[in-house]
Image: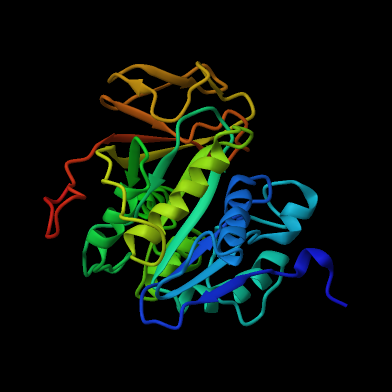
Amino acid sequence: MTPVGEVLRSHVLQSGWPGPRLVVLGGVHGDETCGTVAIERVRTALETGRLQLRRGELSLVPVANPLARQHGRREGERNLNRSFQPDPQPADHEARITNLLCPLLARHDVLLDLHSFQSAGAPFAMIGPRDNAGALEPFARAFEEGQLALHLGTGCVVEAWLEVYAARLARCGQGGDARALAFGWGTNEYMRSQGGYAVTLECGQHLDPAAPEVAYRAILAALALLGMAGSTPVPPAHPRLLRLVDVVDRQAEGDRLVHAWTSFDAVRQGQTIGLRADGQAVVAPCDGAIVFPNAEALPGSEWFYFAVDSERRLDAPGPTPAP
């Protein structure tokens, strides 16, 4: 018999009229509950008729990683949002769940992936590459993706995750390792590889009581923008747009951050961000901002990301200048 933690629950609502196909994920990490709460609230509204699906198809996955949720931790056996590709010989729980989620994502046009984070901070959205025909992540729907991010109403949008991850691999001598690069693939990267587009919304700190409301309003905003349900879309926000340019790993247990950084804290060129175990300072290479600081990162894993203001335009179609 299949263990409880292996059973993936999803809800599919079809309008009967042509339109976009949107999938919303919550609980990709088991300790991130805001997306689950918001999805269940939207599902109830649709099933009771308080919200009407006018066109298209909506799939809701309240808990994408059931084993991790069952244990109340980030991962079941590993991070579900890594190596997110079909595996003909799944060796762990997350690989088996990935094999269930990939076909679901592939038959949709749009993904909204709802998350929260460990440190304090304000909600923000994450988007993928600009339109390009390159080998790393070819893409042709950057404007649509940007529009979705703008309508989610956050004060900040972050771009270029996979590019920085690939640069980290190259720095570690793994630039030609296809398996290592595939480890950097999450739900969004897989969605884009299937011709769709995707936005990750980080709704706030894990226990922030406002985070479920942020997630709920984001689902409603996506449905309205796509003309699927609800009223006229809210006007797009004018968030700060940041481009990730580097990731710094924690190398040893003695490495420590010199401040209780939160995402988007500003730093000046030469400012000390952390200290290595041997006392060497880790400094900002230029003016910019800290993103995803993790004082508890394991040695060999991401300690913090560094970002700068981006010149990219999300409110108009067409190419933007190269970075």
